[in-house]
Image (cartoon, rainbow, N blue to C red; front, side):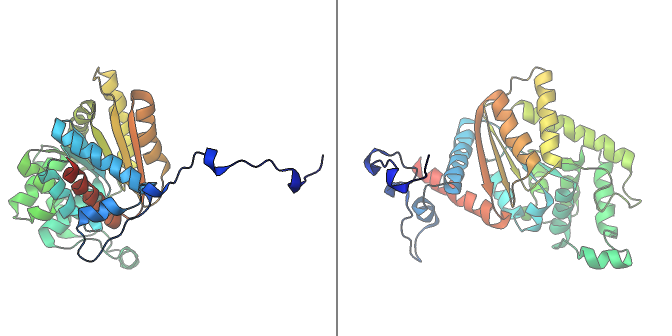
Length: 308
């Protein structure tokens, strides 16, 4: 048999199903174009479709009174997005939030001292990395409140007149929104310091896991969005979801979403795909820098609100 190009069998484009059609292409925008018109003008393809799907789900969940959970890593706060999370809490787009240890530390430092994120390499050289008196003392005081780490830190920020407008944890404390922290022992800068007692850390983390489990157990027809946590929050979420099902919570039909700078195995598997494959729902995946993707999501939310 010969590979003869003359014998190739061709078909007409008129009979082909094409994935990209002219109605999906980018529109135009000017310097005075509103952000919602800008969002509406973007090509309805790939990540834009994913953004629109999640924005619609968030608006629908809020208007229907469904639960919505945002989980995030420390880089989300480091990248300057604390005020955006605060606005989303104020606007009712998320009814619960959860973060890892780093997320809570950056929140604490930013809201109380207006700065966070040290030069790690320089600090390793002289042994000063993570050795900060105020941060560790405040964290220890938060644990002493015995109300869970998330609420404890929120109350500590409020007690010391921190900037609530940039602190998701303090805002959650003010509004009575469940906010939990899930540390990995030994991984946070406050853990080596004497002010943080590991027995207290474990007890308060257990309280937060129980609170988190109740949130996860009530996500039926709701949303879980993971942003920038590659390991801790995806693993905690999957264990809490299984435990909730074991206890009889009828959680099902979840919109699961992941936003991260690169695709990560645990966040895609444990947050996005496995829960929906097991319990039904829809999935969203967006890859890109947090400081770009989350503000863009906010733009799409505003555009979706304008369509209702």
